[in-house]
Amino acid sequence: MSYEDLNKQLEPFKLMVFDEGTEDVWATLVLWLNEDYKQNVFDTRQEEGFLGNGYDWNSLATVFLEEKMPELVDALSFDSEAGLFSIGSEDVEAVKKFAVGFKALFDDESEMTDLLSRATLD
Image (tube, rainbow, N blue to C red):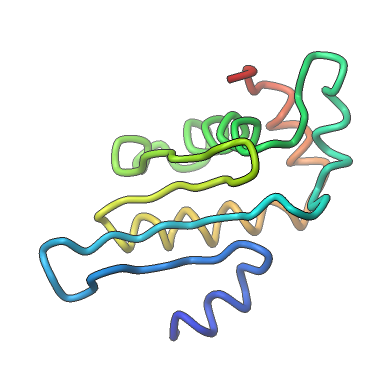
């Protein structure tokens, strides 16, 4: 599958691959938080301080990785900010696997809410 086709499947997330074919290859999955994408899920924990920002997405992704893809925990690293969720690695396949699985989670908001219930505020 081409990156263009994969990115259509991952919307509103975007997978970017830099320096592919070199030893400096790096892949990053990003979500710009200028929309209210799944904000209703984060609102379930608003009283505890969850805002739906990049750091809160990190918290959700951490639970997702630990429970659903523990083999990827050490391969991926976060680089989020308040207005941006970002996770990346030099292991392009690990980022792609995470991206597809993490995006699939959002088709079931009850599962997303359940995972968020175990997230700790960053």
